[in-house]
Image 1 (tube, rainbow, N blue to C red):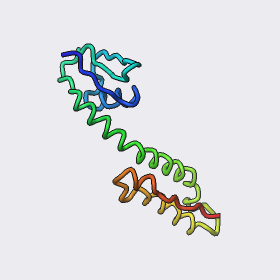
Image 2: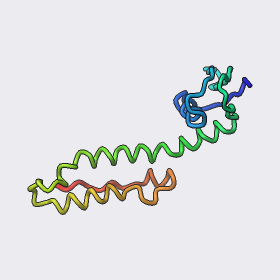
Image 3: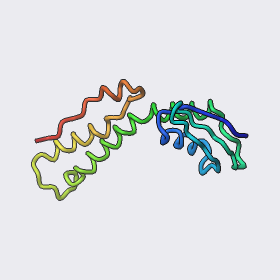
Image 4: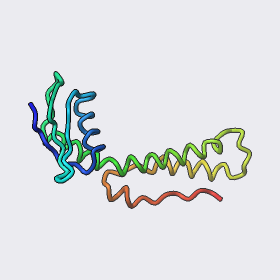
Length: 128
């Protein structure tokens, strides 16, 4: 079954969606630069080929999840960069402030169920 085509913002989004639907799918695709449309030209996989609608839905879900993913990556990097302040050997008098800051970072994603909420996040301030 060939000829399924789909428009996506980037090749990465299209291939990520396809791989999430059918991991390591055996297929060939082409991208038309003029129309920004991807087309599955050959489906050599024994599993069912996803429909255009299935791929479009997955692309949409991945796009919706991306802002929260980016926020989590930044939050995780901030936590990792301050891990040493949470060790018993940290002698600073501001350890309680750092524990509170780190807890606020961990709680940052609670209730973030829309892109607007993710975009409106207020990052906690690092202790001085």
